[in-house]
Length: 90
Image 1 (cartoon, rainbow, N blue to C red):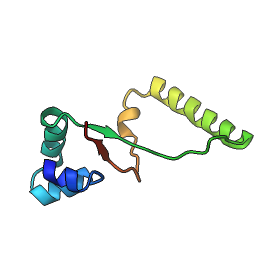
Image 2: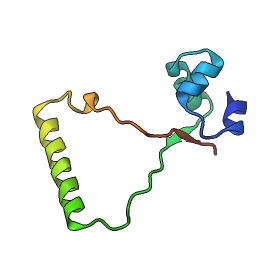
Image 3: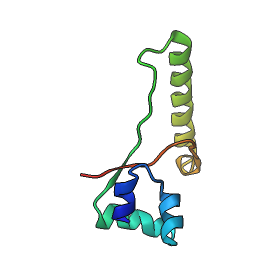
Image 4: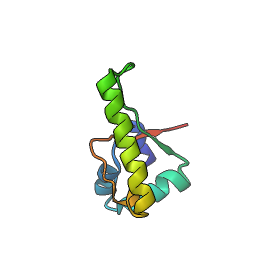
């Protein structure tokens, strides 16, 4: 697994899982516990937001805080997409 990561540090867990024919849970366990790697997600965001964007983000954050306080399972049901798993090899 370490060789695959050195060849392509941006390889995803699913790709590693498929390449090595093991589950994603096993891949995650090896990466974090045995290889002492951590996940780093980088995303480029605008340096300055306009008023509408700031207000929208504030409303979304307040809505999520409210939902979290009224439904303890809310955070577990959030699905994110389009992220890339990049492993930081020390």
